[in-house]
Length: 104
Image 1 (cartoon, helix red, strand yellow):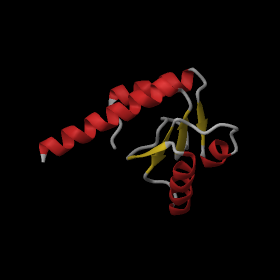
Image 2: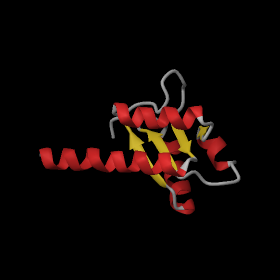
Image 3: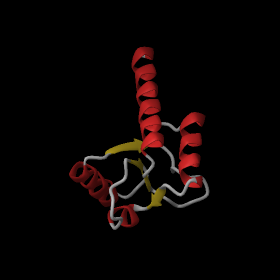
Image 4: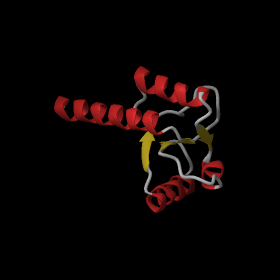
């Protein structure tokens, strides 16, 4: 998924609200599971595999994105802990996927 301006805004709101965890280790060591995981496709193969396994185990959705989730940070995995912002990002991802499908 490419990040559009709306999705970047949602991520920014979550960051400003302090409702994110940066990196796989911080996410998995948290007491609660995130509502959504954004996984940069430039992450190491082991990180991708571990993150996908963690998402499956905890039941949270993981979305692979084509650019780092937060500009200016060397972050490959971002956990979103705010339920409404996670839902909004998932909805926007679905809208983008539907537009791409209709365009083909």
